[in-house]
Image (cartoon, rainbow, N blue to C red):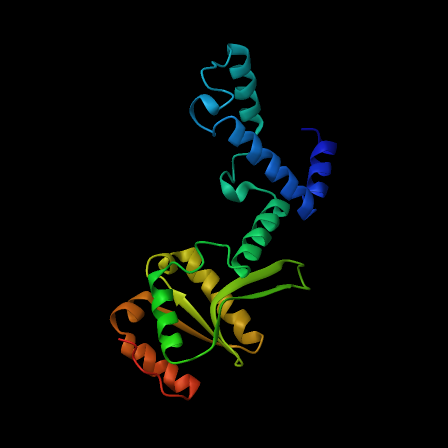
Length: 211
């Protein structure tokens, strides 16, 4: 696609109605041909010519592969995908937003004790110094309080990049007037009593063990 065409596509992609119409057209076309795989795929049974293969090889050689993978997308497309995911989460349409075992355990504790909460609480803003957008969905916010809770999975939150981001998210929450609690997966699964004690101390109300 030409540079002009690509810029036009970026402008059109900002229109939710255009995105939906395009998505519907693609879905209808895929359904009519019987799916993506097998005979439903337009390339099924076709063999690329030597000329086509050479063109693809040359095009691949011109690509910048220094940052290959999903993070090689432009900032525009990263923001587009991130905004779409956040809308789905906030609308309850994101199937991965509440499936972790530790989160379910904490939900059970809060619900059992009649504590109102918001699951997946969004904080986002643009940093005035460098104009970068910060956005993060904190796992829980206790309603009518300034208390946020993060549930840290033992594996993912042990990775260096996750540790660095957790530190930033904690600093952001505190700087914006929130009190942030962090509970590890291990504590929720194997030592829930200590979690209840911490919640009781912070919330100032009796927290009963749901089990």
